[in-house]
Length: 126
Image (cartoon, rainbow, N blue to C red; front, side, top):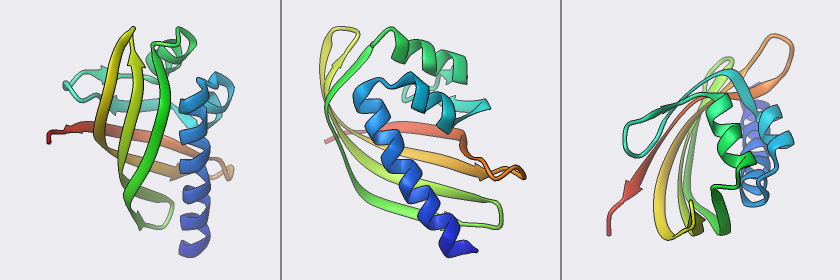
């Protein structure tokens, strides 16, 4: 069971990365739980609606979203992922070239749906 959940999470992480690159709100809507609790790199809280609105507005436009240093801890019905991402693009029209550490909680719900229920990101200072 744990190996199967880990494989599902790895696929989910790649779908998420592609959706972020393409501002694919439909896929993001599938992957993010309705009750998402996300803390941004400045400590601000964001809901699923906030996240989807930002992608609809195309605030984040990525040319590069390269993962490394991924760690996954699997539990009975959820997994915790920590991944280092190198992001290159623009945010609200301003250029970005940053390394960010994301922590996400992927929850496997009783209906079989695997979604992100919580997350946090921190900027890695050089």
